[in-house]
Image (tube, rainbow, N blue to C red; front, side, top):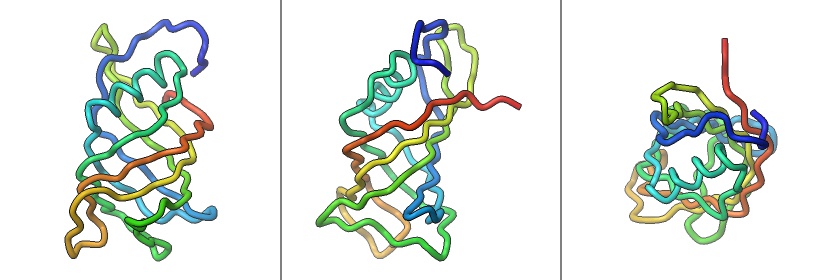
Length: 137
């Protein structure tokens, strides 16, 4: 997907997941809900090429952790890379699977439970977008 002239305008994002990497190793895949501001920021990214200053993911569940999984700290951000995949709905109701590859600093927010794979929310900062692609088979 180029970042030039917009031919399709996306208006909604559903079913987001993200595979997270540390030092080249997959540490896990998470399901989550986008905050309204983060959904708007990702739509601006895909539609107009505007890189978000930050993103907040809610109810983050690392449902596929690997042996490299190490939960982020609440005190200081950790540098990670991720591949976000989601279904984007256009203004004409067409569906597209979009994949965004980016690096970021992550820091959990909210109340921690005893479950080391679940977070109320995680903030992502210092976002550097590497690529945005529509996934086609």
